[in-house]
Length: 160
Length: 427
Image (cartoon, rainbow over all chains, first blue to last red; front, top):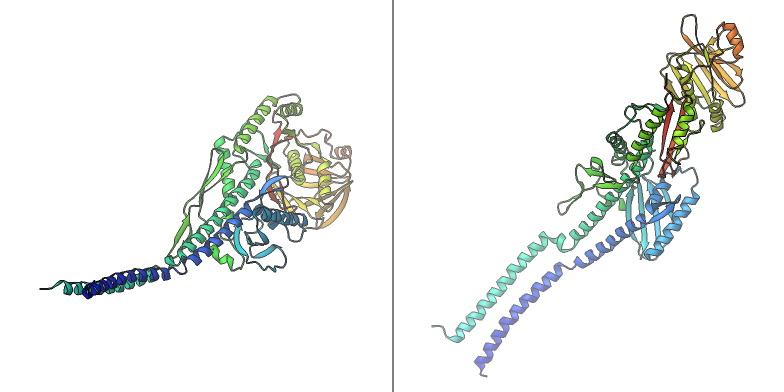
């Protein structure tokens, strides 16, 4: 190949290389612009799983007075209880039910806090010292009684 | 003329220029696109949409539960609902030919009760949340839409009049249609219609019967195991006590006596030994249940009948503005005329009913023997007043939802029970 031919090839190579460089730059720019996408989506899907788990826990059927009620309804029933009257049996049942449900769902270190309006009426465990990263979710339920106009809010945290 | 070499150089030169220009234009365009759609590209919009979806699910779940609780409460209320054309005696519906509610009337009654209950749950006061970081994620929903409710194919269906707006931000607008349906635990409307039709049939066949009570009992037991004659002292003791007075007072004849059932007084005493009945007759007759002889009323029933309250010591009747009755083994009366005075009476309480000289009718609690009063008054008080016989009947169902009980301040199963009263209205 003569010198002219070599120069022609170099020019062609330069032109093609420049085009490839253009494509690579475009891909790089696009990649940069999507840098946070996966992380954000991943985080939101994990958060989403917590909401779904929360609903599953609250909608799990349990027995109370030989009737099928949901676990959420059991918390609502406790929320209707006069705070001055001990409700050991019901609180114990809630704790037992939650342990069973958590076992079935393969989750652990479950913490639950229930509020009537803004006043907490139930919390397990009393103190939380978990090393795992807990997922958290919230739910709203109506009261079963009409003695005041306060709804029930439930906060759930757990590890998976 | 341009030769091959020059053409090639020119081509490459132009290619480089075009590539650089294209890269520049695309880069600038891309930057603008990134700036404009950064939220989408970073995944924030997807994340926000997912969160909105879950918040929507929380409210839908709240509404479903509200519908479920409201239906249970309204069904129990429905069992002693004041039906069109029906009179109620002490919480029991008086069976009569005017009291034959149609299916439409019953359905409307149930829906009306449901509407009142459900409306409580969709007001902003119920929808509050604790001061936690998570609660802020619940969005700015402060009022749920109004609903149209109806019964269809064994379901109670609620259709909202507007969607529930969850998110109104610039990037995402999210709203849900919060309709709900609750399965009727049993055909309450059909059951009520059937019960009242059967009750009217029993009543029709027993009017004019020589033994009305036995006829009703036979008719009731003929309906099956879930129909039962109610215990005369069961239910609301105070209401039954007042009912007994009213029945005596409204009996058509005068110059007669009514022997009162001591069971009501005993029943009240069993509720709380401090409870006291009061009968006041200033402008109208008011019956009260008091915490103790000097206490305030905790329950009151006003009666349309107008009689003077009095008691009967040895001589003439003594008219007083109020009589308070406390009883266990014996009856202690407290009468007030300027000052309170305590008198003792022996059970069972007897009411005597007679017109005085001014032809105003009196009803007196007897504190002495009937014969003695009759002799002193010179009137034949030995005849019992002809009181219409009332028989209470309960119809039970297997439905017993868990409901809040204010007396025990806890949630317990409450039976769906239809209470009826049969009364002999034969002339």
